[in-house]
Length: 280
Image (cartoon, rainbow, N blue to C red; front, top):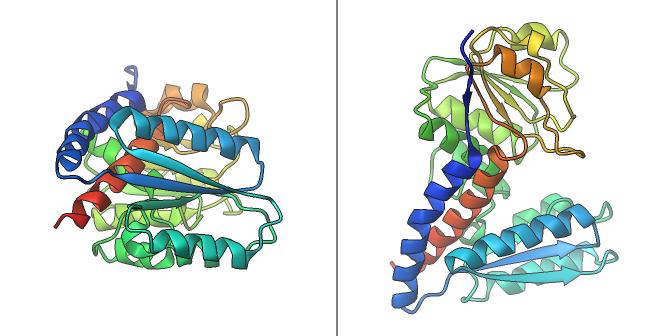
């Protein structure tokens, strides 16, 4: 079997950002400075790292990045008031509530407080519904990154059987809707699915989004399957056992350097579009 196509997220991300730099320059010439505000509750080290990475990516292309840091004991009410203040601030184009929040907070209620026009991370219930119905909303960033990688490498999903492993409201479910809207036949599965390996073996396209390291095994794949690993676990490993999946796949994303960099680029793209919409 030939070596699989390595879907390079850094390359895809670079292409997206190259266009965004010109868009941001145009906006600034019009007196509009794109701004993304990230709200971070608590002191989770991984979350702080992600926020710093996103801030650096913003600054490189001219987007203003601000952080609102709230203590762990912040209540749902206090968090909602913070988000509402940002909703009303006309200088803010995008709001990102870093996931996860402390367990005592109603995360879904907090997400749904973000106004749709500033939901650049695509996490609101209204945004999910709009994406499913192909209406005007910013798509959830990781699912949109997966679709962008398929497009970049000219992988047509129409008529293909896609198996999505994972059902989270910000990854598994929205990417399933996006694939379905592209005329793929979609099976949504998860870690509790019986005979999961047998189901995955039927897939032309596998999206691993289950949040378990090295969960998907190469022996589950049919030869020539396309594998998109959206997982990121401790030790820089994805949800797929990379070595065994590599031997079976015709195309595969690495971890790190696959879906992750494109996810951040999609967040930047959504923020720029939100700023452009303000000028129309």
